[in-house]
Image (cartoon, rainbow, N blue to C red; front, side, top):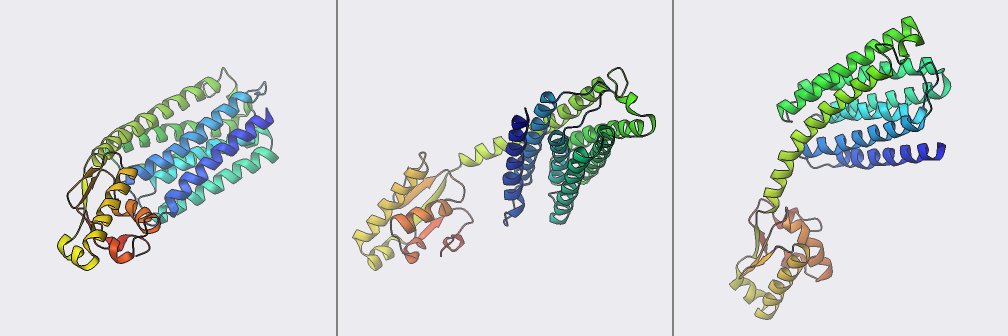
Length: 310
């Protein structure tokens, strides 16, 4: 059981590091929906990992038990939702990341070193702060669709109030409040978690479906790449070399985009930023010189000078 728990936490933590790190480290601006979906996917992975480890764990008879890996994963899941609501501004995103990290470390240490009752109280207070912060950031978010964000805010406010009530009850009235028959016991906590996760899941779907449709429409839009001023190129490089450049361009385009269509002086592709896609194979595999690659013209906003290595 211990090995299984460790395996789950390692896998989910790895997913968080890769996805969130890639999102925060990328220098070029990203679509807000894309960033949200990446971090939300990390949050979902942590939540699933926490749920699996709670199922594996054996609760104590008084209804309070501590599982370091599961508690930490649960806090990180809520923290990542806080991060994804803060990605509108880099400073807020970094602050949310620091808050999530501090909360995760605090919960992990308390779960390992404190009694089950104290560890559970700290966990509940951390969830209250993170879910409340997520709700505030969601209400202030101006880049994501309004209705899904409001749904997330509502779910997080509900869960923050529930965790806050449980934390206060546990602090002042003791472990009896966590008994299965208690209004704030296991059954009530499970229902609160189900309601919150349902609201967040619906919101994610409401953001995901339009994003997927937009991506599909974009992928089906052709972008033409042609060799500029064919007559001048034929004179400067020779007709044989000019035809070779055209043939290699069309061949590479077919290799990287099965839906490409050959044109008289170029090719039409259904990929975003086609010059970036074509640059490595043309420059490094076909042996094109930079001045030859600079002859290509795409009908989007990208120019050959945008391609690395120019």
